[in-house]
Structures are given as structure tokens and as C-alpha cells.
Length: 173
Image (cartoon, rainbow, N blue to C red; front, side):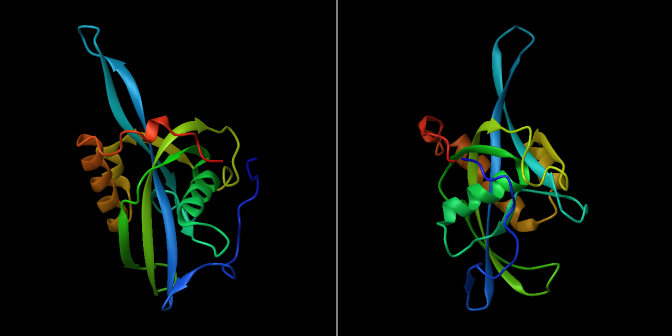
């Protein structure tokens, strides 16, 4: 079952020594094109979303709440903000960064998400834009340095074949 309303408020969010715990995903897929000789080629695309305040693009992320695992939180945030479902891979890393809105430090965790389904309607459709693009373009438009680092790690893993097997899993609800 897919939730049709975004969670709001911070009363159930996790904190570690005063740092808010934030989780997100880099949604990705492979777009198949043909070369001039007709041979198929797969191009990596990633999905970015607009910030709620409309000041730039980023990957879906938000607070990790006390009633969910870290992977569940990452999947929920991606569904709420980007309207996609898929398979969550191994954690890309953990970053400490200063929140632009509150001026406090947060801890951010990012995961890859191989997209299996893109929804026409999702909780934040009316407040966010979503856009598929090449990873190089996403790196340019993403407003957070730590998300750019996570993207670099994902690209390296995919080039090394380390995210293989994720394609065979059942999509997360």
C-alpha cells in the first residue's frame, strides 16, 4: 500500500547528540538508446527534485523517524518527494553538514534506489518538480556538496559492478 500523504513535523525524528538524522536516495535507472550502428547502449539517468523553497535541485531526503528502519525512511522520503518506488541498495555513506534552514548540524545518509516504478501521483507532486537527467548534469545542478559526493560514490560502484544484484530484488513498498 502506498501512502498518499507526506509525514510532517519533527516530534518523531531521530537525533544523535543533537544532530538530526536525515536519509535519502539517489533514484537511478538505465535509459536504452541505440548507437549509429543500431547497437543498444544503456545510459545512466538519475532523478532530482526541486527543493520545497524552489531554490535548486537535490536528491530526495528527509528526517529518519523513530518507528522505521533507515532503509524504510529513505524509501518513504523518495516516494513522498519524487514519486518513485524501487530497490534500495547498500548505504553510500554518512555525511555531517550544516542545515541551511536551521543553522544546526545534521547527519545525512544516502542510498542508491534502482527505480522500478514511477507514479503519476505522489504526496509532494504539487510542491516539487522531478526531472531525470544524466549523472553529470545532476552533479552540476545539485545544491548540496554531500549529495554530490554520494553521487560520485554511486557512479563508482556502478562502474565497478558493485550494485549488481539489486536489480533482482522485489521493489520496496
